Length: 491
Image 1 (cartoon, rainbow, N blue to C red):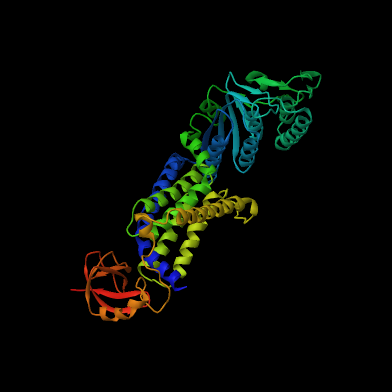
Image 2 (tube, rainbow, N blue to C red):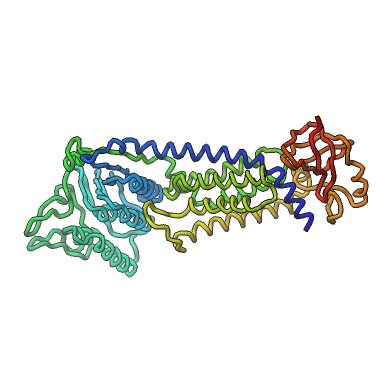
């Protein structure tokens, strides 16, 4: 038990360097991220009661996680800034059905108007997403349709499974298309080749084929009273569409840009447990070795990457980073000013791990916080896997790296078998420690407040009661304790 307590004392004596570095780094990240996050909102500050605020989100290439990330992030920023309209500037050949459903659910959370601008094509999954928005506009050469489900490689789905998927998709689209004219029927005709689309006496699509529509076809009127088949209008550009709706000076626009960061976030979120495990292990090694170096920096960078990946994925805002920084402050106060209380350190560690869970939870602005398993299970699993990986790697390190300079820095040179001795000193020599009281020695490491002193070429664990002592400073031995010498700086 005493050896464990001693190890903890040694660890905390070296923890402060990592804490200070972490504190400044994460505060810097938080301030930088906050500045980046606030910057795009500047145009919205110009909004008046006569102007409509609009966020335009690009939807390009395959529908996959990068598209989900930018849409989710854009929607959350739009909600937080009370934006009136979100426009999906769409040019996609389709993609993942699972990702499509997540995008559809995210769009349903936005309280304002949602518009799809079909910028040349909205095929397959793009048609499903378009059907979720309140309005669908087209470029003059825009095309929408051909939404039958296929395998990931493009092959046809087996007949029975296809029938089940088509039935589900049609029901899903009907639920999102209620009150939107012919939209449910049109999208059903795009999904199901056996579905006949007929309005009045006019057959628009016969059985045996899938429906695809050009811009003009989608905007044709049918029925009594006449209603457009699918489209709300045709515009040369997204700005032209907004001008037609709100007037040339009736709106203010913020454009999100899809970058390589969304693709990077896919990989980062896939290996989150690995990043967490390696980060925790690196920080543990740093705490167990004197000074501050590679492992401390590596651990901080790895945890910072976890926050970055979650932010780009649209899961995390700036708040979790600030909470993490607050946890670091509490731990630093415990180490620097109030050692031994433990309450501050425990609270700080709880905030730090809580902020990691928070950063991975899909929470939305202005929605009540619901502690449901669906929201927090995945983050907790990632945290658990990360800690488990850190423990396993630590055990492997202890098993296969028992010797060498690096390992020698992590362990005591002498086993501490009992409590009736000074830590690091053999029992047979413990009685002679009393003679060190009053002696002059040198601080072998920084004492903040714990470290090591050197007397007659030998090192001893030591602690200073008041203030800090820099390495190389002369010290006088005041007394001894079961875990080291009590020293103070000489004049």
